[in-house]
Image (tube, rainbow, N blue to C red; front, side, top):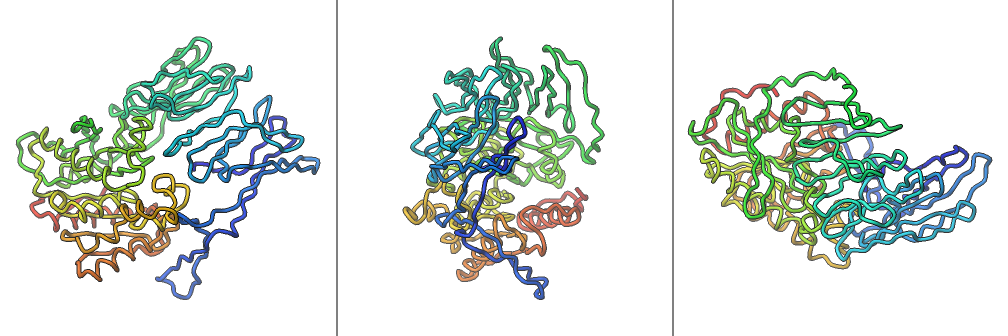
Length: 513
């Protein structure tokens, strides 16, 4: 849901809107540490798809000890915001097809609906709203004409060619927000009395605004890391120096293309110094490929690991297919009811289009690696398209969507107790007997997001089907691998696996990332 707080101070500091979360209805799961059998398993409340959620309630608590309960008519509390004139809350139905924006009577706790949005599939949550300008104009984002559009007092103020990503801040009557008219770019805009103004363009930008001053952060394919500049009255007045270390590898050389008939935003990276015609290269697809995860953007640091893999002797291809953000509601909702088919089709199409553009890609040696949703996609690729993919590395993959959480999973696949078909279509477990290519499964045993049961159940199904595969359990590791030594050695092990699985890769000994 993207909400990381449960309390909100009133502007005058005399009251607090507080959320109370009762987890007792939620099923209890146990995450053990097999490397230390003397330790008890960690008990966590995990709301898997189709199972009970936590009960959420709201109250206004006064600093003088008073308390007023707030009526919540819908089960999901999405956002809350105190303004100079009122208290706003946003709630959502469990099927996520209705979002309601309400005002709260601070004396009684009763709510009154200001706006209610509906969609037959789902509605996205956009960060930064609701809000009000200094004059009290309501700032909101709604889907309209296949675009996430910015609304001020019920009127759309952005064109349908612009996909609003989020509202960053309000300063007087000026609204600062990020949006995209090209999916690989996230630009910074302002809307105010002078209309719509583009502040940062051509890369990935963000910013904050206070007292007429904008601090803008920028990333680009043209420079390293993050650049921070200060703007006032439309002019740049300074830059905040960075002390970040320069990456040890060469700057990624990222080739961007619109692949296939759907113009899939795709990045291709070759080994440093490789020239067209130098010879065929094995291909490594390196996607995330799922909702909320965009890999192909004009930000250099997003390609550092991919360039390192390329320098080990691969042509690396990264594609953002249907379901990824930046291209509008219809594009995002193309995965509704099926998280497998369109997602995989787009990776295949991007691969073939890249090979047509760059003949040095050897389609007889294609591997794919990914983590989380990308791990699911990697395993999916070798299970359902072994004619295209010849090896896969699946890190922390979701293999059975019934084991993933309610708000994320039910948005795309619905309630499995009411309609199990979307879950059956998207599950990897029934495909276990189809495996005919090398598959390496990697999973942190302490993962409390995508629990290790995902990998273990797929491995059991593969063993029952007599399908050889490899499993690398990571003791004490959660969903990601922040431990430097573990992360580095994982990359080296992945290169070793791909070299053995694909053959013909001769980059020499892998260098440390």
